[in-house]
Length: 149
Image 1 (cartoon, rainbow, N blue to C red):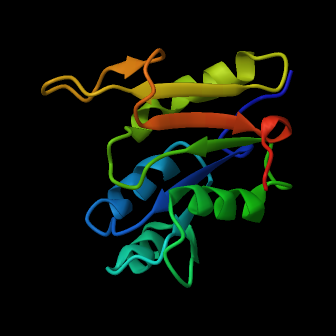
Image 2 (image 1 turned 180 degrees about the vertical axis):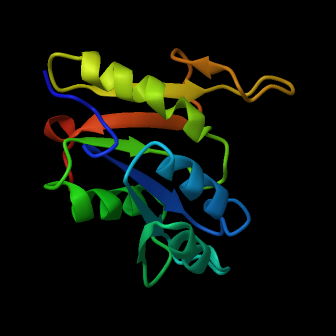
Image 3 (image 1 turned 90 degrees about the horizontal axis):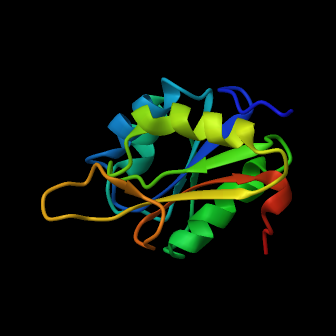
């Protein structure tokens, strides 16, 4: 069985204009994982500087290319170096303290898979994790199940 551990999982955080939150997100992720990639989609603020200072490896787009391009940029950088990937948004809506749940779930799978947990906004509660609604994807992907165009 392949173990999803802090060394075998890389976090990829697409970000654009997230200077206010990115440092906290990166620090939180680094409590559970050894490597964080921030794919900065040409932020107009200090996102790149703050992410680097917090300990992330940063790749900055030379122009705004959108979130999906930032995700692909991060994957291209580390696709051959890691078996598992964890995607978080840079705005702080995903709690890095939940990463151990994803590590356990990824380890328990016997075959390559995509595990998606999605957050659904309730009136004043952002903490509920849902698996049925497609708002704000929060996914772990194994390398074998990813196709990078």
